[in-house]
Length: 273
Image (tube, rainbow, N blue to C red; front, top):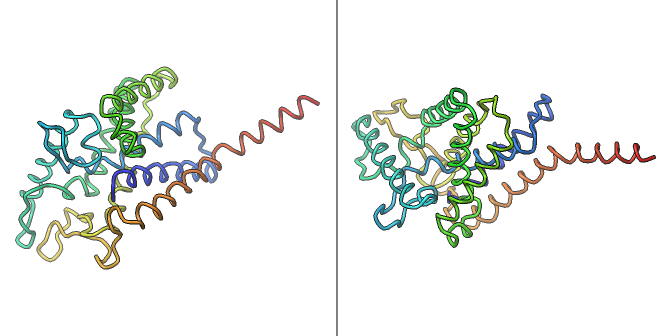
């Protein structure tokens, strides 16, 4: 899927999960915590595509996520792409085809999701508020690039970076400093998993079962038949799926906050009598 669809799916997944936790377990979050988790999950839903690099020297090409912070993120994307290709080459078996690029390899596996989720949690837990601010800065940039793709394309990476900095500053000012917010790691991991699931319904699939060898192939692509696959950029993705993700997000926000607002209004009306 395209970047905006991935980002929307991550936001929808986190909001729906937050509503489910609140409704069924009583685990409540402040509006700011929900917003931060949603932004991080939306950004995490773009993270696997760091393995699709562009031309670093001319700031061209690459996946949506690779263009977020200009040449800096394109450089990181190229490093990730080469690393992913190296992992593929080092672990492939006889029936795995040769590849000239690392897209849809290591970063599209469950071990990668677990690794970045654990790493994010470790950073947030061990280094506290300022690590959280750094994570929010990076992930907010990815989320802005994905959720508002056309605006971000017109505004350019400098504006996106400034907006990410403002979001990170606002987070630093308003979040209590005595917590590590380990749920951020879960948000990143969930975003990555949602990305993989999204790519599984498009052509070619993903190596979600790696590193389990299957019929002398380590990197078998798993997904629905190509004849049934969602066309990348087609109407099913851009209209049906994005509309669905948007509705899920809006309904989840309503479920999270409308009851509290109504209760407060009722209390205020009783107090005024």
